[in-house]
Image (cartoon, rainbow, N blue to C red; front, side, top):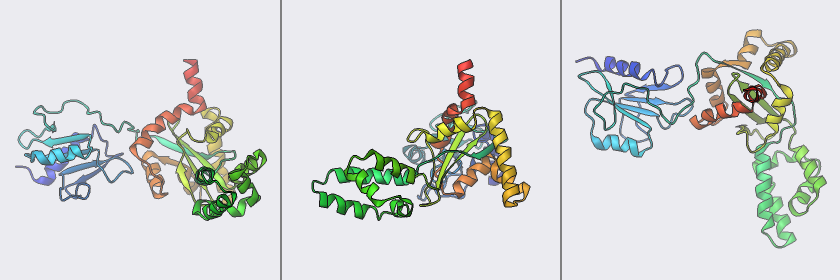
Length: 315
């Protein structure tokens, strides 16, 4: 009978083809399952998602209700390991797994890929403030009296997302006009005010793309979804029409960072150039929600890159 440590290592070796250790996190007989008393022998977690595993494995005979609980919890890949033959089986199956199991988590990036970033040129709105203003405007529309409208506006402007932006507004009256009037001029000025100190960064490996948006006024930091506000994608097209121009801008920005801020070259390069593991860690440490769905979408967002669209048209 092999030692349990050897058994767990054997399971990890078998899972490697479906869940590369360079990308996925393995936890062996150490973590309770989603707050319960159950401790699976092996749990595999997708990058930046430490709450629910994408795969669990039990060694030898396992109570059926335990496997059923995993299934009810939404785990896509449930397996058990045969002690006698040293093979992996799917939950409820008696035949060893001899093929790659397709799970919901489709984005399996090459760990050797290098993701580079550049700051995009353009005016970008703070999404948090824009959303808060829109919600406030919609709530004001439902109030019949003018006095009630103004009182609601004043209360709403004390929300954190908006309060910090008040110092950059050209005029508070623009906000009031936007809420209760139909002044196109005030809306345009307000839109410009919401672009103050908002920065967009493109991360790409040439095929997939992730765009981050950071507001230095209210601190809102998020990953663009490529749908709600397309200004970042327009900026990408203007800034980096080809992959060669992207690489040129990337090198130029790193050189400028070293020259202007006297940053050590190696450090400056590491800040702008990361492996997929380093990028995921960086995004997670920045407080961004990087779910498997986000990474799956990164491949779709990559279709918005100018050089990808040009290649598609040529084909």
